[in-house]
Length: 458
Ligand code: UTP
Image (cartoon, rainbow, N blue to C red; front, side, top):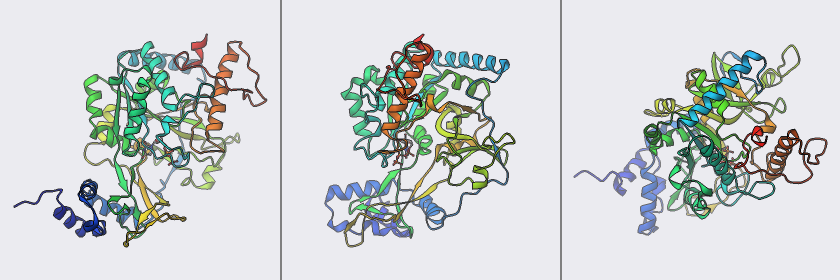
């Protein structure tokens, strides 16, 4: 008789073959529901793939393979440089708006991250950020999307990727807030994949005697999850061709930007990205470069120092295009690269991960003890045809909430939201008292329901 694929016997045998049978170390002490939970988690593991990952990414820490030839990336400037480009941008804006009207674009938020640095108890999108009315990140995006629905297409869809740890709470938050006025059928939640954490000698860690230590598989996992969840099929059925990708932690983002969408379409790009001019040579953002003739992102930690400090003849920074995780992806492209195994590299990080030892004692390490592996969405760029980069202005579109305090914190983000609003108002001749850096003395806020672009205030 054939053994049930997910039976104890089968999964135990598999884990033994792959040197992971310690996962069953407490089996006899578990009750039925605990045993089931453990079996369900182990059944999700692809042991053959994990063997390869353990060999190549856990037991060895190969440095990032730098391309032989690294040159600065071409990008479309934030403001058109001459009349020809002004016309091109004008046309692109119209093309983008037409695509939005025709229902060819959807919004897509990646909200599956753990948000450890912020230390907020709950999904990060629930964090209250707006400077006056204290609206959550989710609400600000919802209002932006509502504005676009009114302007362009009432059927516009918003896809949201969560993870096991925050899925239910995220949905509940939307329900509790009546989806902020959005049609619930137009907000599609789905979960990303999870990846186990490993000890430095390649063993999968247990979080408790009956559960693995699992974390989300990185924002690159969003591409696989789009397919696996059926979201891509849903998009094809609805005629959605372009996916406007943004992260949950940057409330200044243009969730749907006609110019960006239009340039993506006009240039026949399969994956487009926004960049900004780096604040300093070693800013902790990825760098857009042309590596061996392909557009790609090299992380700040991998870009050689002499390149980070390199200058043009006019003393401007040579590698100046920083990556801010805002993209347009063509649906066809995501379909193509997720056929079979998604071929994105795994990035290795040494982290502090609580675990249960072989005696059943749980430890909370004070030093990094475990390897986590994640895929990053920008690694898909070199796989795309005609990828482009559009520069944007930091003060208009980027101020992420990453840390509890200091740089990229709620305080800096609220300040930047207020400053942007004050700047928009100033150009409409409404003056708000600001300090010499342009930061208002008090919070200033305009709902995205009212204005998503400065020109909406005219
Ligand atoms: P970050 O790289 O800032 O990670 O994610 P994080 O997990 O949110 O925060 P820390 O590092 O634990 O403090 C950038 C964006 O990518 C999403 C996050 O939700 C955020 O929008 N993300 C990250 C995912 O959706 N899934 C992941 O596996 C990782």
